[in-house]
Amino acid sequence: MGLFDFLNNKGEEKPVQPAAPQAAPGAGTDFFGNNKTENNGTTYTVVSGDSLSKIAKNHYGDAAKWRQIYEANKATIGNNPDHIEIGQVLTIPSL
Image (cartoon, rainbow, N blue to C red; front, side, top):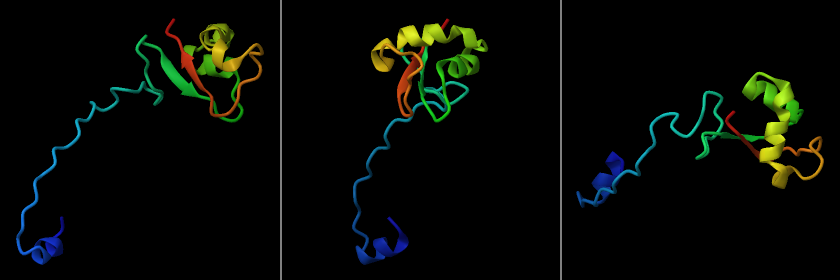
């Protein structure tokens, strides 16, 4: 409520709504801004140019660990691990 609103309302008071509780900064994300899941893993949204090996290299430091990401996301990815789509949200399991 601004000053002019107060003057127009002739001083009528409105109840104050409690603020919604906020999580601690960074509580739901990791260092890279990826969402954390309950199993200490994270989620990652696929962007243009991504592959499972690039995602594994970014998250694990080892591109050869792409199979762990694939196994955790078979239901989302399907039978072809080379076919991931922009916008897919993948679970990145903790190792």
